[in-house]
Length: 484
View 1 (cartoon, rainbow, N blue to C red):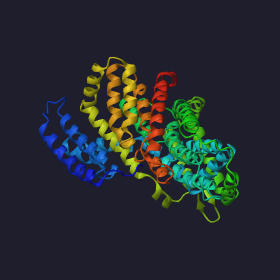
View 2 (view 1 turned 60 degrees about the vertical axis):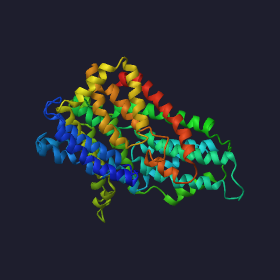
View 3 (view 1 turned 90 degrees about the vertical axis):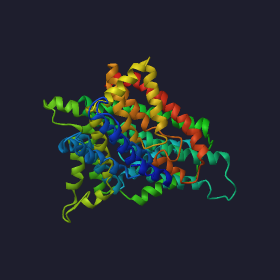
View 4 (view 1 turned 30 degrees about the vertical axis):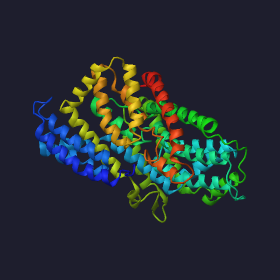
């Protein structure tokens, strides 16, 4: 989950402005506005949006406001307000979190990453490619923040190899190598999560809202048929543009890089039984996610779904013994202290707010107005993706999709098109923040290394934003209608 980056003054203003706006709107908006409940829901939504943007309170705490205010204001009964906080999609993400905890605890993710980097060679661009592939793959399954944190020290060690034999100032090629390596770690950590439903929170928000609004479900495997090509293409073209045009390095070989990776793997030692068990559970869970529909057809019943597969994989990490004689397991409950519980609450709050906005008729009204103003669906789609990509540079991508996706669904409904055709590209765009260090935790992590300036990230980030915009638009026109 993203850390707070707001200035204290902004937080203070937002802290006061949120409840003040709520009090003004709840007493000022006429009960005849759209529907009798619309003014109250809009008042709560305004409070939440202000606090989310200003980060005046912890984001998950803000997400609890509908649970508190909706029953009090008579918008929903307590049971109705609480139900979205237990949506099946939340448990899918919880299962994914548990599997990720096991990968991190037993350092299996680091072993996978090091072996992937080792394959691509020791030239400047070869090393950068290895880090791009490894970071992107790991980020498909675990937090982009954790992925970037893991890859950063390895990358810094490689950069330091360039400086170990000389005190002279570094060459432009060596400087470009350091900048490019840092950038691809941040960018691949962001882009890799697009490939799977559990890869990044905006994906989970979209799937949950889609199920809530339209009762339409996206299978894990079908998501990957869209997300993986988009992710791989963006990563591949981004790597090529950064290393060949924006920050070319021209380094044919970095002496000692191969030995460094081998030493890291040696430090990990041979693969332990715990790692093998985690790998088996992780692989089995992934295969069940991907092939659940053929298996359900084979079984003649819809016994498997993304949620029960994810929870089964997560639960197995706690009940499969790593050493039965000592009664030790792959995960213990204390490990869940590292689990992002706040994200799960945030999902529930967003779903509850969206349900309130929909039941009050606000989403339909806003969607209808925008649909009437839209002369072309293609230009509307292009504009929505653009807004998603550039707004997420300045605010939390999770908060953005919580606010933005319900409105997008309302627009789609009024235009008579499937909501997923507009919603999925917007969710993809929310993960493509490349220009500023504050945009995402991976951006901030690599920027803190000191190997680049803000203008370096902005230079590459703007190009990457435009690349992502084009590729998401093409994917929305070609892949999404074909597969989903």
